Amino acid sequence: MKIFVFGNGNLSFEEFQEHYQQKMDKWLDDSQVSYVVCDFRGVDTLVMEYLKCKTPHVSVLHMMDRPRYLPDKYKTKVSQWEIRGGFETDADRDAAAIEMCSHFLAIDFNSNSKRISGTQKNIDRCRELGKTEL
Image (cartoon, rainbow, N blue to C red):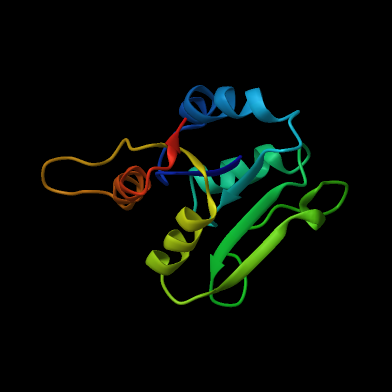
């Protein structure tokens, strides 16, 4: 199972714990589970910080030459993570992450009738492609 974990950039730490961490805890001891995450603020950075000492099974996708954020490698499992860059746009990077995953974990707090967030667009795309929602 490869889980793409994504979401909004403006959620609180408490929202992260409630909607993401509690769910990810179920799979941390399963070596068959890996995670895909991008490098934006909010959910992405919180997921990386949470997983850095817990699993080597993480792929970080980023635009251009280097990630905007990456946790410290010293005494963590980050040095074992796959770091994959060179994407020209957020859309290209997100499409690659969606292609890689079999499952996804995401919540959109920001969309409304006037604006659909990038998170919601990615949720919709995952659903269209039949990815399993967690």
